Length: 181
Image 1 (cartoon, one colour):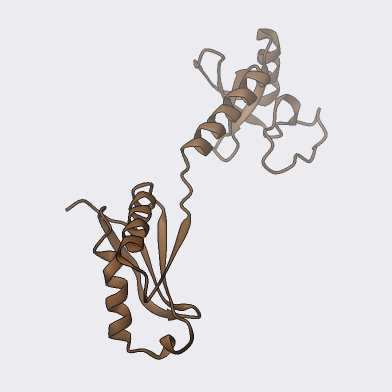
Image 2 (cartoon, one colour; image 1 turned 60 degrees about the vertical axis):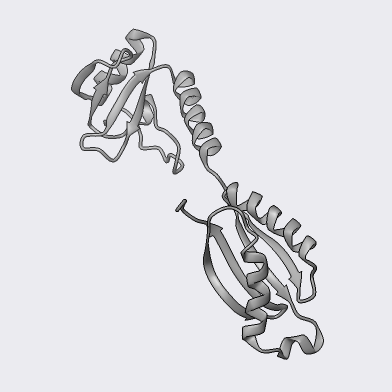
């Protein structure tokens, strides 16, 4: 490779043609055929004869794998793969529902319905029992009983990811979607 001075290629960028600095590469043709291990300069010439570019697709292999193809088409395929991966990735949010000690049964039913919808979508739900003033010093069994009032109303299977703990606002627990029984 004495014909080409070494060039710095930014990390993550694909090397093509004269930027490939190894003495030999395993070459894959434009139709997917295997040309075998070739001298890099010879592979670049072969790619230009066919009217394509030589693109290094697997730089960490020994010897590195290079494909003879159109660079624009290669970039398009790579961006398409990234879009597909991104669209299939599901982000889960932690939704927060806050109830108080004196929250009525109808309001609890509405909040339980909302929690059920969020759990079925795959989100986590943080359930806060808000305690104001002297309520912070009530017995913990009584407070957990108040949390259980809403838990029995949830219509989808769930599991408690983080059990009830004291928090600055009062008592909190985290729910996740559970398995069907």
